[in-house]
Picture: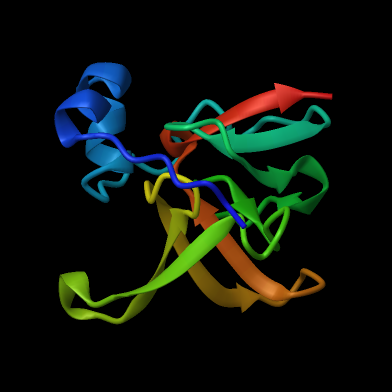
Length: 132
């Protein structure tokens, strides 16, 4: 079971800064092709940019051509929470960190080239990276 991290929005803003706060706490999206982790090729673990929880292994990362870092599975099914997102006039599946409830990106089932068919489409600014 995941121990939840709970902070006030003021605490998150002070810790993250306005750009990361917009993405992680207000479900914003960074511009495609702009993220520092998009072309990351080293072996390691991708973590939550807000709390550091481990989310994805580098071996599950693939080039989806979408402009955002993409993974075909999380490190553990309990590492992320999936939430129905009906904003922008469509229904999507939002991905949140199970530890701190921060917005990470969206899940799509269009990755036919992967073992799962899933595309966890992440904002680089919602992630950290620990090299192994």
